[in-house]
Image (cartoon, rainbow, N blue to C red; front, side):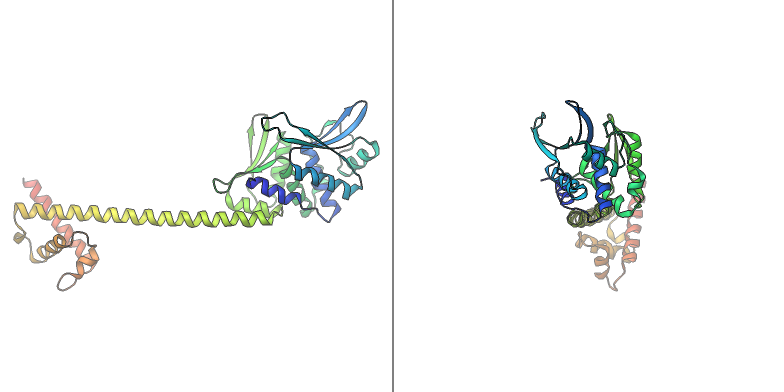
Length: 313
């Protein structure tokens, strides 16, 4: 199962104790997956999904909230995967009226997917959490955190996306909207904010799993940065040592090391004897010992002398 599927599976098992939260979550599900249609002269309320846990949750929410037992029809999809499609429905006028009245969708005809949720349903913080949870269950997805951080909910209209974005941003997020084909997608890409949105939806197990992935990735990146830094320093040290030895050999061939002042001749001989040593180590080989900056200063003087000799040539 994908990480997104694991999150939905966890959220689908949560049934709010408060009736107003169950109604807010149902309003989101109905807004994304629900329709009111006329079939064989009857008005039918349907909620259609390919997610089996969501179908079970819809049935439970309606039963627990309205004491209504809806029908569940399982169909075979037309896609390449031939996934099952679950349709939760009722054609009883009094049940439909009861549900729509509670969801404040009275008078709705045709598909409900373009409509906005009534603000009265999402005034409480808990109801806002429930609504975002229902929206994600119906039309959301998450990328595998091992690869990238991406959270999104696909909306069928721009006003609907704007309402959802504003609702999410009330929890101090920076959700944005991007147009994708005929839809508008509300998305979050920053890893820490995705952790927080899981907390808002109360997907605590998924939150801990994501945090574990983030910690491992950060540790791995930190180690890689440290190794790269050390490798760069080693390369820099080796390159400098090679140039120093070349300069010393050039002076030796052109003028002889005896032409150098005693302190420079001494560091030149030590560098030739220990070609791989760091500057600090070279300083300890001198009598009296010299610090790193002193060694560096002497080697720069040698480089200047070699440069002058090359210029004369």
